[in-house]
Image 1 (cartoon, helix red, strand yellow):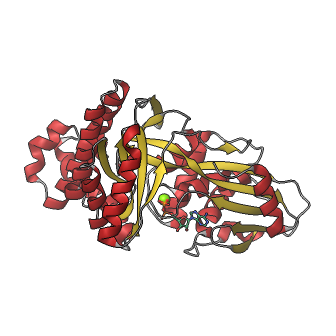
Image 2 (image 1 turned 135 degrees about the horizontal axis):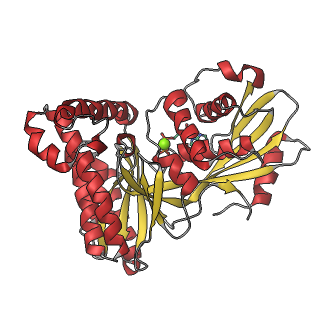
Image 3 (image 1 turned 135 degrees about the vertical axis):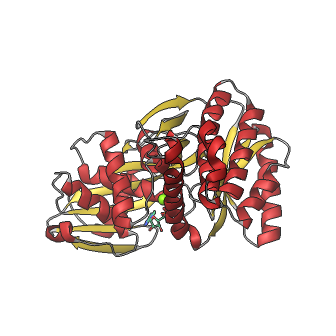
Length: 387
Ligand code: ADP
Ligand code: MG
């Protein structure tokens, strides 16, 4: 955390110049340890909430508008509150904020004129979920003192992204931002919307490495994977009557009937079904401090994303393959939606400096880009910012 409430309030007043009292809310990004693309298949995921967060400073206003400023982009946009219900997406960053405001209104929350100042430490478009951090921080700010059930809020923010922004995402990012806890990863069941804590061994550091690339394919491929998983369910349903998601297909049923499937849905199903099992195995290995097994599961998860789900890319594969050759690295894999963004690495505390040195040298030598490193300390979930 590099920002203070005073600083945020000061910056807010520089932009909006209002006398009204300012309240500040914080929503963290997340790094997903394991369970990739399983959330929209009603499966299991295991993220941690990050120290890196989005901050939303808000004050009431009399101008009749939702005015929103992003410190990162240096842009202000404004929307008439009385037109809020009928606004459609503009296909820029304000969609995340307006989508949330519109759904809050639809849920019966009165959205009043405000000035909203956004400052985020979460890198944008890098797979650490700057989008959910923005949605959740905005939602909490717009709610102010009015309470809303955390799960309802997570679902509302997810819907804003799926319906208004137009990315058919699952619940993981918003759930992790709201339910993350200091000192622990969480295992989320995206069918029952419940979670349990997964304590990580103390002799371990979780390091995210930003490849500094995001290939154009990312958002179109995401929708395509959602559709392919749905096709896989349809092809498997005759063998598991009543199945509505890949979560309903036991591994034994998949293995028995996979030969009758078409090639693409078969590969996608193999990833999702095996990934759910890996999440459970990873949680068990973490609880018993079995670092080699945690590392093995990381690498298996990466290969599954690389070859079966086919959402990795050259830069990310290079980062993973380089990392796992370094002494003291237990495992590495891509994290997030795919086609760029970050890898997540399980590293022995004594090896972190050497890890960063070698990754930087190898990656910049090959791709002429300098990777960034983030120390992923499990941090508190979203709430009012009280430093
Ligand atoms: P990720 O969630 O992995 O960071 P996404 O593509 O889902 O990547 O979301 C990134 C988008 O979220 C950005 O392109 C931008 O539209 C929006 N966003 C995130 N943080 C900010 C910010 N601080 N200011 C403005 N827009 C932001
Ligand atoms: Mg996102």
